[in-house]
Image 1 (cartoon, rainbow, N blue to C red):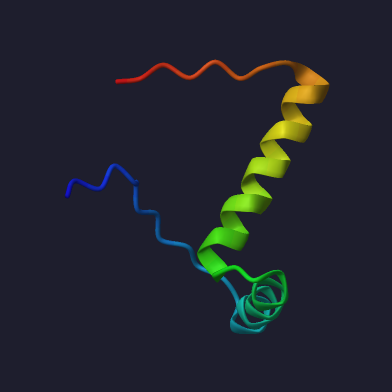
Image 2 (cartoon, rainbow, N blue to C red; image 1 turned 135 degrees about the vertical axis):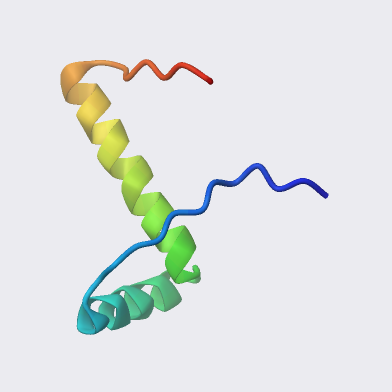
Length: 58
């Protein structure tokens, strides 16, 4: 099965990652999915204020 997901390495303080893990577990998500939800919300907020971001596929 081909995986179309892009991998991205993230450097973060251990304490911050632990807190993220706590929030993610509370929400019933993995840390990865919690980060994804935060990114989606941030993009939605940005686009609401400044308009849709156009992305071209390469």
